[in-house]
Length: 245
Image (cartoon, rainbow, N blue to C red; front, side, top):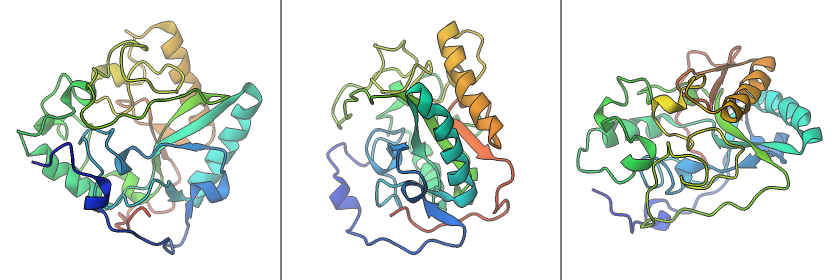
């Protein structure tokens, strides 16, 4: 089992920018104002360490997705709001790593925050993780909305307390997002987009994100308030495996 003291430098060598496949782009080249917090390139995620093939903290996606996000960002700007992206294109190697991680019963490092009410081996059956993810087709995106000016957000470090991602805002780990009711990637019923047990403000915030995304051609995955896929994706049957760098 990998320990909390493993560093990113020990896992990944230094890499150079790459030439992307056709129709793929770096999001910052299309709309640099969108915030990026690439969770799987760091330690604050449900496996508790950088994920293989995430070699840089950059967001890659297909060009239609980037252009749609640009249009959404332009709608949010007058209200002093911005999108923040947690994940977009995901290499198949990363999904394979998630499958391997789920079979290790001794590694429960992040259970309290990210899957507090379910055993990790059941995450696939419950529909929270897929062995072949739509992210690997390049047109799925995990995101939220952040107020401007951007509030300070602490950086979680290995060894710090793991807080229940279902706790109310102010009690779970601080994210600078508007209140979406749970932490990102909290794999729990409370993260179901239209869960009626949520406070009115949270339901309204989720509806804002969902409405904007649907207006611009995305469909929400009902179990995860943060996950959206482009309906008319350019590669509906292709799963890519080039690294994020």
